Image 1 (cartoon, helix red, strand yellow):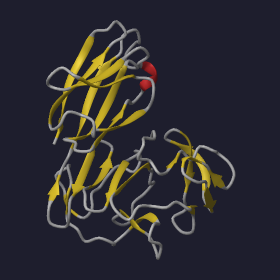
Image 2: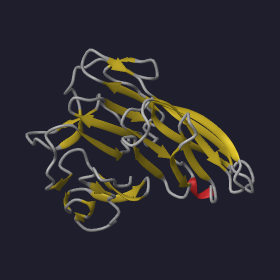
Image 3: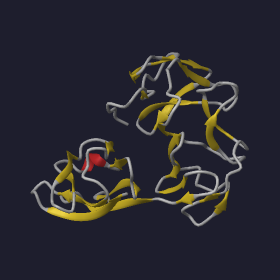
Length: 253
């Protein structure tokens, strides 16, 4: 994850030792009973599900805000949601039986739980307040506006074949989510290391460039506040020779 002007706390958990984690944005945090382990991007913290925690003295807004993180859960024994935890107003954990909302999962499953593959790394995005909550499991998500209205968003998958690399190692998938979007999108570049020299551009229907980047990092979080309003936008993948090899659509609504 990368910071923007609205970020109040950003923690990579990449110290790999000790009992303190330093914030890229925000104060340092105290680690209790958690163990350092290998993670999605380098090191990570492993929690025992009982008395392990990371405590950060961070002032959290009482209105709307967004939490994003990578999490790997080796097994599931009960339904899990992201919620305030214990008696702490701004403490969050994966807990069971705290919400009785009925979900409509993008897999087609209904009810308050869905079966996922515990051997994969699910990406979870959650907002708190009078806005939507989305729980991502790789390319699948459920978006909950309130307890009676449910919408489902998708992930745009862009499959690319990289020239100059022998198959099957020349295949990569770029993910853009959520789609449709309203306030932001996240782009996950997959195995970006093999895409040296490639670029991604996003244009509006008038041909105006909204975003451009070299594909040389894991992900981008992009605010849509300065974009030109609701409508269709076009995601271009450009090879090192400047050729557009793929164009896909995303919707801002």
